[in-house]
Image 1 (cartoon, rainbow, N blue to C red):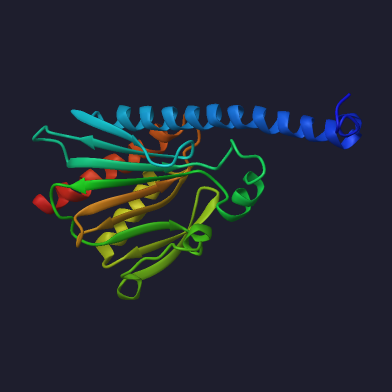
Image 2 (cartoon, rainbow, N blue to C red; image 1 turned 180 degrees about the horizontal axis):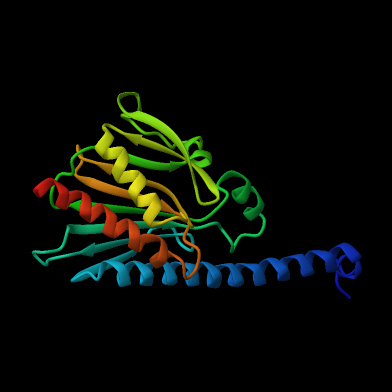
Length: 224
């Protein structure tokens, strides 16, 4: 009856149909999972920052979003907080294994715009992340470096003075588990603070809150 009727009766055809069906299910499942991660992370971010205004932008289909949070209160330690979240392509099951091998995990990059310049440059960076492709501390040769065990991970401290080291050590004592945090930076030259973390669902606020408070105290110290 049909010119190619023999093709649709072959086992390989049914395998192709089943494979296509699985990929389609994976596409919708992955989009839902990434959306849940994005919404959870940004809601946690809003809960911590409590902005007066905010904008959210999709920058990568199902895998990328950007947020700008604005603080207008005079007593707020920061004027603005930006966040970019990039996620694994869970909607593309063919590419997902390669992405997990190369990128390993979802990423949340947070930039804090400081109202006042902190005393010195400081970094707390997880040892494994410090060696990751594209991760670089520009002023590392001018900073003192030390290794510590923080929670279940090995971290490097970068600081300029004993006071800076004390501030970093005090933070690790007050927050004994880094959790999802992989890098914290305070850069006076840019008048910014930076935080990199893995945005596990429901854990962003718990990870960011102590960092947010700590960086604000660094600026208060400058006023004394």
